[in-house]
Image (cartoon, rainbow over the protein chains, first blue to last red):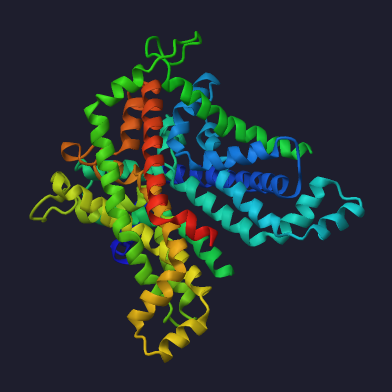
Length: 223
Length: 278
């Protein structure tokens, strides 16, 4: 890998950095991936807390639904989701581009496992002190599962960053393109023969995936 | 419990509704346009068409051939790598971990773009022959690149399973005169068998969803003589490029059924269910 991206020279790094379509794509992707990472991690935490520590009506049905949808490949959801996006007029909006990623089944089950290990006594103590459930969740449960939370957030950031199929279905206007769509476009130019500058490709790959790699690096060095 | 409500509602709109709606679409007749509000007649016509669709079966054969080839190498390579990780000094371990993880974090698009530098004829003008336009190389290219991205993370998973092996087992094996290779076969392998099988299955399911890599490498086409056409790519082409959501939904359903058959067969043969109850 180092050999492949090592062919980038300073001139082509500059060319990528000065490319306005690249900058737009990076800004879009950072924005979308951050929102998806934060929202899906928080929702997974809520769902995990509800599933692990509460016995509500329909809990078993929801659990079965979660496990079942985990087995379903994401592509099975796409026709139905695409139709929904068209009907609600959300086509070509940023919300629609991250919308399937806002709820993570895998994340919910992961958080459920993590939260199940949080001792019940700490929750009871907080409730006796007058915390409502939202504060029990935020102030007692979440601080105890920080490693799981950060792992999930990094994974969901990377997933949003790397997603190609769904965003390219939804985002039609060029100004909203994500980093993955930009990279796919560069690849298209390269394979059709329009672009034959190896160092430009190397620089493009290096710079476009650097945010994710940096995040991964920071994360593995935590623990 | 107001805040149970929020995730459950989102779960419904993001996953359950599209799933049910997609199922309905797959079983509805294809006349009229996709977004019309009037109810369609239920029929099996999408599936009838699908079973006689040569392209669909080509895509299925490509996809499962690829998944099979990847799965044959992925776990053995990862096992060897994970076993070798045991002898790495702890001080270097964070770097090795990051290196192994990094190929997993980089998405298919970027990996494809990176490898275009090696395989693309227009980028490598001096190359003597063109591997991308030869259908015999398609599977090989896709598999090699996929292994490059997945073996690292799989090895890390296996390594964490290996760390929970009781070290006294290795000591007694050594006292009995077992070499490194024999320790691997008789101590390590039986202990991580359950994890390896679970990872194996996950790998098959993940490789069956191959899309980005051939999409990027073959310039958004199906490759030479359709050799890079995968099920997800076919779904993308029919459902979204030509706008037949009903047919796309039918493809997705058959794809899931095929995956289910493969998974059940795998669980049966590997005895995965049994190893986990022990």
